[in-house]
Amino acid sequence: MEKSEHTGNDLTMRLIEIKNPQGIELLVEFIIGEPDYMREQIAFDTMRWLMESPDDTCVISLWDNENNLMGFGISFIPSGHKHLFISQAWMDPETAQTKWPELMLDHLKTFARLRGLDELRMETKRDARAFARKWGFEPFSTTMTFDLTKENKNGPD
Image (cartoon, rainbow, N blue to C red):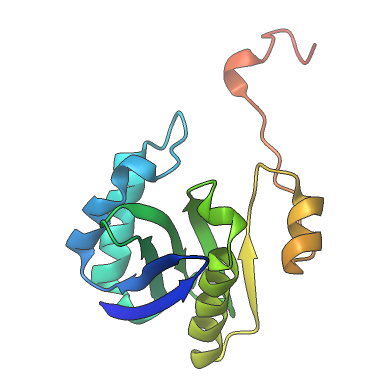
């Protein structure tokens, strides 16, 4: 694991890049699952990415002095693409108001640049405009979903 330690606002934390797939087990309870893609499956997939493509996978974690997880990000380079896709990100609400989100994003930018990538991409269920204003992301596409379980058998409502 690569470590970086920063101090600020009376808050010393460690930013650690997880290289060992077993380290993902520390994040499982914070991973955001979906009804058809449970957090355990996301953790398993992330472990597999780390084993199969360690140079294309970046998992960063943020820990306080008492070894409490305060944030993490899971990202990977999709096969054949020139961008780093941020698939999961979480941060403790109080920590999110500090410099740590910016430091984590800077780490991802460096990871991508060192691999000759052109951009970072991500999806969000939050207000994309606010995210764009704060971090400089620009809308790239719209992901839409159609729930087949709610479809009227005689056609759309």
